[in-house]
Amino acid sequence: DAKTTQPNSMESNEEEPVHLPCNHSTISGTDYIHWYRQLPSQGPEYVIHGLTSNVNNRMASLAIAEDRKSSTLILHRATLRDAAVYYCILRRVGNDMRFGAGTRLTVKP
Amino acid sequence: DTAVSQTPKYLVTQMGNDKSIKCEQNLGHDTMYWYKQDSKKFLKIMFSYNNKELIINETVPNRFSPKSPDKAHLNLHINSLELGDSAVYFCASSQVGYNEQFFGPGTRLTVL
Image 1: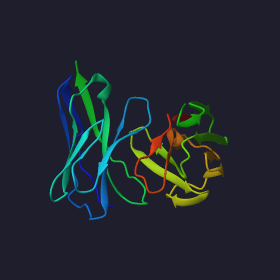
Image 2: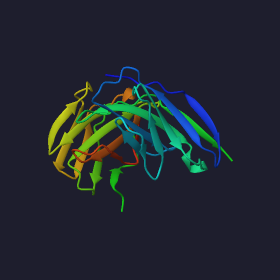
Image 3: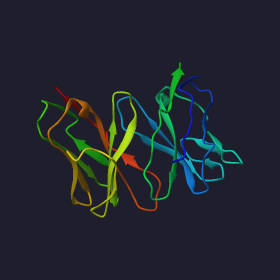
């Protein structure tokens, strides 16, 4: 399975944008890039996913490199509620999701 | 309305006991999953069920058995509990053809 690499932790100030990087150099053409987050003491929560083009939704934006070997999750304006562990996952349609260690995001007031 | 619910939220039991964790989803999804999150916080998929058929069976001990009485429920039965089974167990559901999985709040299992 293709793997992802994320920084262990990142910090951000409240109301500032956050860019969470993910490297996936062994991604295959059929792998979708998914992002989930897990708030303290809660189950994971879907954030966004994409294949080749950049994606936007109400929660975040996903910027995918042209060669697809890396991607960046963008939170446009971090709030305290965005403090969580963010997981970048590669998944083929119909296959299971394999979570890595993720990035622990701390948001400072 | 809770989309994916699990009971109980906490479960403390002795080694060797048999226990069950229940999961229900009211989203009309046709696929349900069980994940285990250990003390190091790694989430690992254990099982998934699609239309009452097991489609993924990770290399978990056969003491763990998923049971799906209907499309809205996927219960997890654990026999002869061991200390290493202590973890948080999450249920999730999704619709075939869609990418988003919805997770329950988790059940913290502690084996003494």
